Image (cartoon, rainbow, N blue to C red; front, side):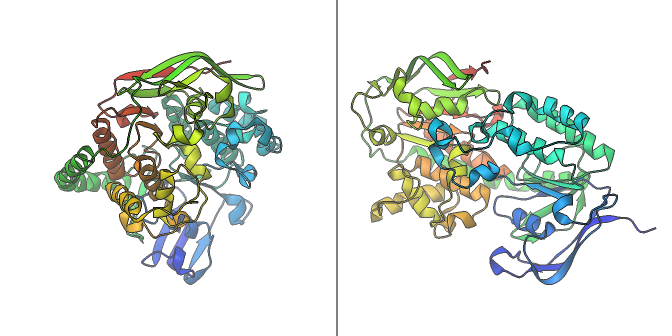
Length: 491
């Protein structure tokens, strides 16, 4: 008896050269297999997913499906794909960066309840709502969800439809540790049931959950032969051992370059960088921050933590002057009280910032170097042509983050990981006095995570630099961390 195969690609080549892999794809997914597509940033994983889902027509070859026991043969009904780039769904159409913080611009945005729609299987609904903590979010505007809450909502919405094949792009990023463990257990149970096939798209090459049975490596826009999970991990261990010394030398060189960078900007001289005095933030009936006192002194390196929805991103939006409520709060930056005459741009000129919200809002299809250059003047687009020496600085930081070769490529044609590296270069480009990094390693592959962590470490060794960093992974924090603040979710 022939083994059932849910998706089969035979000599498949996309018609459009912009979305074409560098070699034809021959691959089949057995119906009883749980698959991980793994590869570095820009390797071509998303292009492979586009082929699997039939997003683009083929020039050569074929893609065929067998979704049994599903009664439907429709790809749309049987395959669900949650992409890395966080999205607010239909609320995304006119989304802009500060919209989450501007209450008067949220009236037309749908709620979580409206986006989830009617759910027929009540037991299934209750189980998923309990698992992801959806019930308290139901009447919340979708664009008010934190990055982690948004991911929980996306996962619950996809799982509620019970697709035959569920493709998840880096499903664990942005989730706090407890939710990651819950999700791993849930996916393992789904895999054991055998009614839904899981395909995980992973940038962390060694982070392969135990329920995965097979791995498909993707590198240099070529798809390799599918391997059993055990064989892939053995291959990866050998490969990592061979490249570790070479990587170490590269990272040591990077650290020296960043530490030896000349100081060309005038800094504030205040010993206090951030001071919040009994700061409270409310949205409707929900209290996000309650009478928070917090002081960050010059040169300190802070780790900011807390479960999804605890208010971490809201707190950072106050510091960066992106939240209108910041002007009603007692906040001092660099020793100056907010709202006493200094412009937003004067404040921002001393702050480098990157976050999932910023990444989500960056829909400008400018050359990547223009995106980096926009950090010189804290704009989302590029409204002022940089000088030649400023472009040289941009290219220097792009080289530090390993994306200098992509400087002329349109930003929206970069992979999500490459976009994140460009946005990191944007945050560092003015050698800021205060560096605020919200989940900076989001979606990066194993090597680029090491690279970015090395750059952050080196930057922290520079004179009078202050860091505030958010991550749900303790091993991502630099060794230079001096202080910690853990936010608790309010009622």
